[in-house]
Image (spheres, protein in one colour):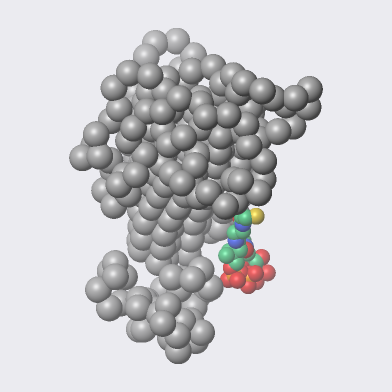
Amino acid sequence: MQVDGPPGMGDDHDHQPWRRDETLGSGSKRPASDAGPGNDRSSGTQVHPIVGCTDWGEVRQNVHMVFIHPTADIEPDVTIGHGTKIWRLTHIRSTASLGADCNVGRNVFVDVGVSVGARCKIQNNVSVYEGVTLEDDVFVGPSAVFTNDRTPRAFGDWEVVPTLVRRGASIGGGAVIVCGVVIGEYAMVGAGAVVTRDVEAYRLVLGNPARPVGWVCRCGKVVSRSNSRPEPLECETCRTSDLGDNGQGDGAT
Ligand SMILES: CC(C)(COP(=O)(O)OP(=O)(O)OC[C@H]1O[C@@H](n2cnc3c(N)ncnc32)[C@H](O)[C@@H]1OP(=O)(O)O)[C@@H](O)C(=O)NCCC(=O)NCCS
């Protein structure tokens, strides 16, 4: 779907953010039951027309709106959850879905059918190709790339191999995720890593090829550089605060 400016915009409309109400596109929406595991699709399943331009104050005050920069290209049949913001030159392809309260940076590419959970942060210049699922609260650093065909050619069809990034995991800037892997909950992929194998939950992986080198707390701090999993798997701060529930039934497996 081509993004058109709303009625009543001034000459400087290229610099004015505007909003649409809830989700975008035409045609049928993907039902909530189709969402990837753990994805929050409780909001963002209806289609509404453009409701006009806005300003920053309004965007900040009304988190139930979807914010899309006028230079972004949102194709038909895209589902976008409440409060999600999509910035300059980003391209969201048909049938992709993004949960509520995501922040999608500049020049991001989200391919056909990609599923992004709620509260994900996707930084500038990231490419998320078909076959990728990001669960809730996933962070993807600038210029990270997800691949989707293990043996690509310029000719013939793609053989899409799925990749799953579980809840709360972070992918460092410039990382390459070779398709067919599962990145575990709250895992941390270091900047520039090339991930070729599954990553355990709460694992820190670095390098090319990415290798496990430690463990991270749910908050992201490195808590151990050892190969064996520390107990409890928390940093000092989280251990002594309400945040800390790693290893107690919240996915720290
Ligand atoms: C890995 C990371 C989490 C830091 O972990 P850490 O254990 O605190 O790492 P340190 O800074 O103490 O460095 C420990 C060693 O790992 C190396 N190292 C750190 N980050 C690395 C990376 N991404 N790849 C390879 N090696 C790395 C350091 O050079 C150091 O090695 P040395 O002891 O031989 O000098 C961090 O460096 C990183 O990559 N974070 C992601 C940043 C990012 O992409 N942010 C995106 C938003 S801008």
